[in-house]
Image 1 (cartoon, one colour):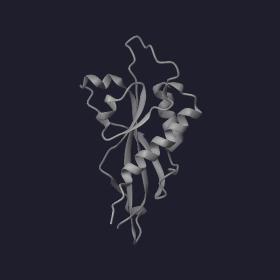
Image 2: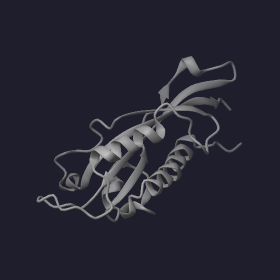
Image 3: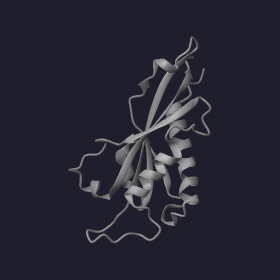
Length: 157
């Protein structure tokens, strides 16, 4: 029996939904530039400007969502706005500010279902915390980041 990687499925669904949200908000610098990667550090290797999405873990036990046949699990996915700005504040035209980006992530996902993954009941949005090492020179490319946790019921087999 093949095992479904729900974490990757959720990350890919987040990429699809967020790409549509960026297009609807007319952030032209990012249209077509929401990219799924394997780890948060892989985001720094992408062509800027862009939005990166990566599974982060571990998954969270959510016993309040469990049933006799399914486990309640939260799958966290990091999403980050990356740009190669300058110290003088010059920005690429059509880019959202960090505040606009964070607001768009929250309004797109927080307490909402995730289309594309039927098992997800709702998503939670939180700050990214310390996913990236601020001492890494590539850290300067990070404008802002958040974590979207997709919570739902997933089969045990």
